[in-house]
Length: 86
Image (cartoon, rainbow, N blue to C red; front, side, top):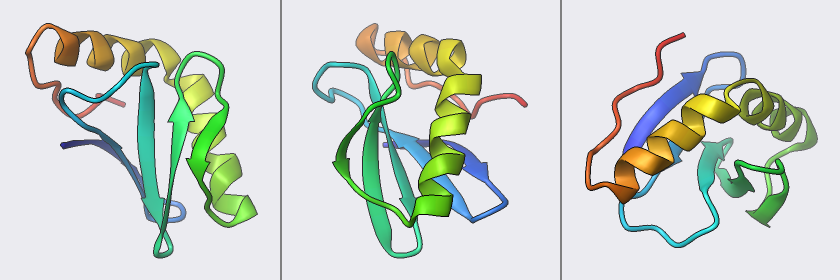
């Protein structure tokens, strides 16, 4: 598992796990909760966060979609992605 980024406004951790199952997705952790979000379509696939934090995560995934897909591709090639540059 690697933390790809941290959304400071809401203290949300965006993570990805090596050897994780498709489809490409990220895990968001905040406020004692977690959820998974499909990178391609932005759908919440598991779990939940409070509404305000969910909206921040969904906006983040939309804004950084290509970077997140690149990080997923790195994991598929056996390369651990680093933190996203913003």
